[in-house]
Amino acid sequence: MDLSYGNLALKLTIGFLFMVIQINLFGKSNIAPTSAIDQLQNYVLGGIVGGMIYNSSITTFQFTLVLIIWTLIVFIAKFLSNHNVYFRRMIIGSPKMIVKNGKIDVDLALRNGLSASDLSFKLRTAGVTDISNVKRAVFEQNGQLTIIMNDEENIKYPVVLDGKINTDELEMIGRDPQWVSQKLKEQSLDVSDIYLANYVNGKIIAYTY
View 1 (spheres, rainbow, N blue to C red):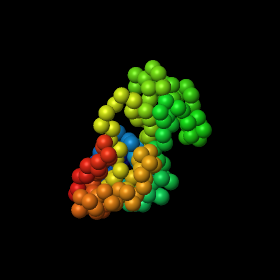
View 2: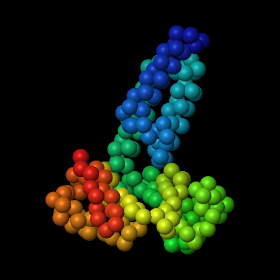
View 3: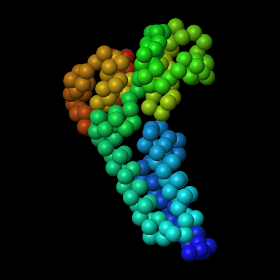
View 4: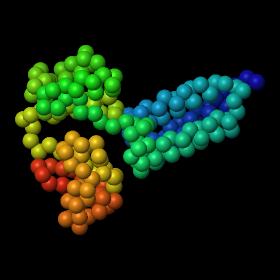
């Protein structure tokens, strides 16, 4: 069966609508991807729309059904990554401190696929000429390198995100979840009430829902 211009236009319209729905439903992060889920969401959605609209053997109903299924898969993955620490680490990963106090953790860098040339390039693009001046360099989940220099003040450590204690950041400052809970309790706050809490200069500054 030949693909008519009407069916083609209908599939394009449906594909466009699902793209808009996913952007508004899951937030704007897939416009500028910050995680593996965001990247996969874009790649697969683009592949579905681009690969199926010209296939005359795939009906408009089947095309729409596939888009609905993919939207549900992304929704479930994002929900679990936001509410389950272990799932988040498995799917998205966790930040890794590649450089600490001017020293490179070579084994950690290699385990995360960061070669010496890649690390040098990322440091150069950040304006770092002497690695001994780096207080810490964190390899983020999206492949970016977050660099903090020795002379920087008021460094913020996000210890609570979306009502969940950020154990990765706690490891970097040598604290544990019980310490965070106690500090929040002193402010008459519970972890579940916190949208974002930063550790700055020995204090926790919390922003509630």
